[in-house]
Length: 458
Image 1 (cartoon, one colour):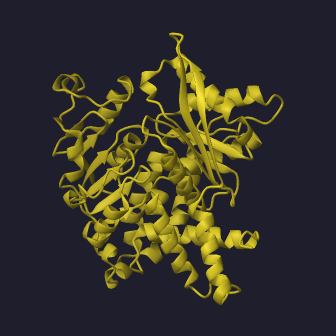
Image 2 (cartoon, rainbow, N blue to C red):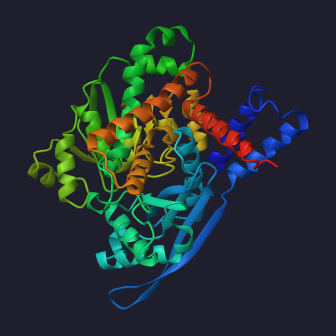
Image 3 (cartoon, helix red, strand yellow):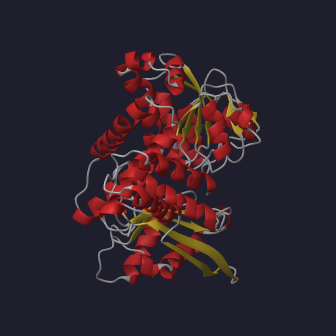
C-alpha cells in the first residue's frame, strides 16, 4: 500500500509542477487541488466486507471472509478480478483495486478500479463447495454488482468455471435483467470472449517483445544518443540470445513462457521455471511445450521428480523453487504473487530486465534499489493489462451479442497495447524516471483531468 501511495504522490507532484497542466488552477487553488487529488486517488470509494456462510459437504457450517473493494468509478464502472487465496486480506485487495484504476486509465479503458477476494485455498474444497462459495459471493454482494456498476473477472485461484457460476447466480437473482456482461472471463459457450484465457500472458510477453524488438529497432539511433540509464540497459541486450527465468507457471506464466519460447523476433532461452512446489532448470533451455502439456494433465503442477520428467521426456534438474530469483539470467518474468523481490533478496538479483506479469511482485525499496542499478523493469500496470483489455472486449460483445474471432481479439489487444507503449516509451527513454513512474504520471494526469472536468475537486 505504501509503495503505491508514495508513487501516486510523486506522480501528482510531477504533474502539478507542469504549468501547462490545468492552467486555470493557480497558487493556493493548485495546492488545494493537489491535496484533494492525493486523497481521492489514495483511498477507495467503498470497502465491502462479509463472512460467507457456507455449508460443507460433511455438514459443517463455516464462515469465510470475503471482500469487494471499489476504488474509483471516475472513468466508468468498477472492474477487477476476484481472488481465491489463503493470504487474501483487506489491504491487499484495496491495493489491487487502486492498481486497476491506474491501469485502466493508462490503457484508455472506460472502467474504474475494483477488486475482490475470498480467504480460502481452493484446493481444500470440493467442486460442490466451491460452487456454493461462488453463489454466496454473488448473493452477499448482490446490490453492488452489475454490468454498469461493478464487473468482476477471474484472478488468482479463479477462472472461467467460477465466472460461469457467478454469472449464473447473478442471472438467477436478477430475472429479466441484462446479465451476460455482468462478469467477464467466462467460458466461450457462456458468452466469454475468444482469447480471454490467454490474453494476460500474451499481453505480458508482447509488451516485452515490442519494447526490445520493434521499438529498439525503430529508435536505435536516438537511444544511442541519450544518456538514459535504462536505454543503455535495453541496448546492451538487443540482438542477442536472452536467457530467461519464469517465476510462476500458472495460466499467466505458462502462456507468457510459451510466447517467449515460440517468438521469432527475439532469441529467448528459458532456462528455469517454477511454481509453488519446485524449480526446473536446464542450462540449454527447457522444453516449454512439454511442460505446458504436463501441467494440463496434472492439475496445473510442474513435474517434481526425475520419474515424472522422464515420463514426458523433459530434460531438467529439479531445484529449490526460491532459488530462481537469484539465477544469473538476462530476464526475470515474475508471474506468481506480490512482494517476491524485497529487501532481503534484492541484492541477489542478477537479471537486468524484469517483467512484472503478477501484480506488485517487487516491493518499493527493492524497486528503487534495482532502478538505481539500471535494471529495466516493465511494470505490472503496463505489462499485465491484457486480461482487462480483453475483458473490455468481452463486456462490449456481451452488450451487443456480436462476437469477434480469436484473431480479431488478439489484433485489437496488440494494437491497444502498442498504442499505450508508443505513448509511454518515448517519454521513458527521454527522462530519468523509471518506466513505472512514467506510467503512473500518465495515469494520474488522465484521472486528475477527468476529476477536474467532472467537478470533483470542489
